[in-house]
Amino acid sequence: MTRCAVFGTGSWGTAFAMILADAGCEVTLWGRRQELVDAINATHVNPDYLPDTRLAETVRATTDPAEALAGAEFAVLAVPSQTLRQNLAAWAPLLGPDTVLVSLMKGIELGTAKRMSEVIQEVAKVGPERVAVVSGPNLALEIANRQPAASVVACTDELIAKRLQTACHTPYFRPYTNTDVVGCELGGAVKNVIGLAVGMADGMGLGDNTKATLMTRGLAEITRLGLTLGADPHTFAGLAGMGDLVATCSSPLSRNHTFGTNLGRGMTVEETIAATKQTAEGVKSCESVLDLARRHGVDMPIVAAVVDVVHHGRPTQEVLAGLMARSAKPERH
Ligand SMILES: NC(=O)c1ccc[n+]([C@@H]2O[C@H](COP(=O)([O-])OP(=O)(O)OC[C@H]3O[C@@H](n4cnc5c(N)ncnc54)[C@H](O)[C@@H]3O)[C@@H](O)[C@H]2O)c1
Ligand SMILES: O=P(O)(O)OC[C@H](O)CO
Picture (cartoon, rainbow, N blue to C red):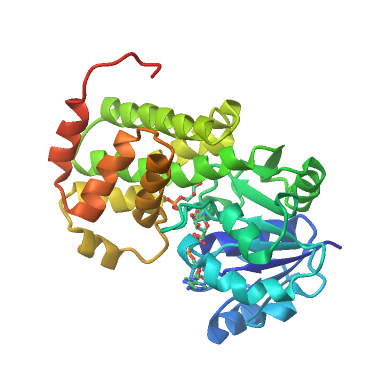
């Protein structure tokens, strides 16, 4: 039986633990809080994040990272992106020599502008072939209800990607392999920022033309950044690109979309943060994505507009008018 450790008892960590267990793996879920870990072990339910989802009995929870990692073939990381470096520094010495690290996270690190797989390689001192990424249109609540969805498991080592694919393939979760880690990670991180922009348009009462425009031009920004960083353009037409963008930008379940909607309705950033109980990665990552783009001379006007609203307090109306007033240019630019 494949043993997996999953770090993070939030919505996606718990739902992914469910997937792995349903696919036949033995899973240990690491969480920070003893009460939550005890509740999961006693009831096979995570009452704080997925109260309506029953987990297989092969999912056990612990607060001890060494216990979680004992014999683990895969160490799955599902904590907020900006906390990864500090958390992983404590877990890295406990990793087995062949444990593959799997990132579920969709963010870019503030300050360094690094992707999560880059942070993992640096902190755990492993090569790229020991790091995999799972990314796609995967709203945790839908998957927790075992509704059909597909995803991408990416690793530069295709054999590792195939092993992970087998480990998480269930009747309701269909993973495809890809070797383009850079493209999958950028698709996941930047769609959160575009999801904020589309949410703002929704909150402002704007219609489908505006939202389709933001999504399509958002995908153009993602692709432009990805191509500059060596990604495969096909990735952005796939599940980790357009697929995830569509899910996030259309769904009221998306925390990023909801955050943007609240801003578009006129709530302040502080009010919106106070009303947001779970991780909306785009709120912090919009700044690091823009930083990454600027380091590489890539123009990302929608991302810059989101940063203006979220971090510089500019009104959504004014920022949208600014986007529309940009100089005319060919579409493929
Ligand atoms: N929820 C989804 O639908 C979904 C889907 C795909 C990918 N993701 C990505 O997965 C990652 C995790 O998201 P989530 O939805 O599970 O978030 P969440 O907010 O539901 O849960 C985050 C978890 O991390 C824990 N946590 C918070 N701060 C921490 C810290 N400093 N150290 C250790 N643990 C900490 C929380 O207690 C919680 O258990 C994010 O990068 C997100 O973009 C989420
Ligand atoms: O709720 P969000 O906005 O973090 O989006 C969740 C997933 O990334 C969708 O694939």
